[in-house]
Amino acid sequence: MTAIQLNAELFRTMGEIADDETLMAKLLKYAKKLAASKKADPTLMTKEEFFAKLDEAEREIAEGKGIKMLPNESLDEFLRRVG
Image 1 (cartoon, rainbow, N blue to C red):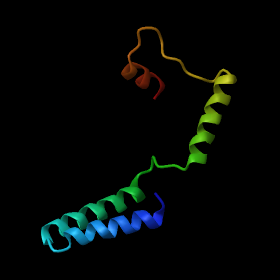
Image 2: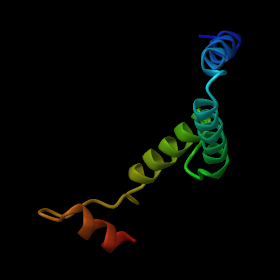
Image 3: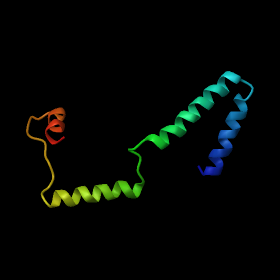
Image 4: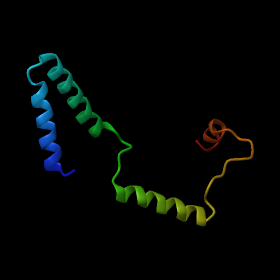
């Protein structure tokens, strides 16, 4: 779906609930929360950034810099050890 189609669908749906003040207030609250979460989420990255991180990790592993979990080591134990 293109941005124009998404925009049209959003406004069409908003028109269906426009007469209900309670639903419009909920929609506004959710939209503000959604907009704020996009700005505040430090884990968001572009596709290019994601693949650059993968490339870097593969390079480090090839250089022997990778850290492996020990046999019978739990994830919690591993994270404490490397953290």
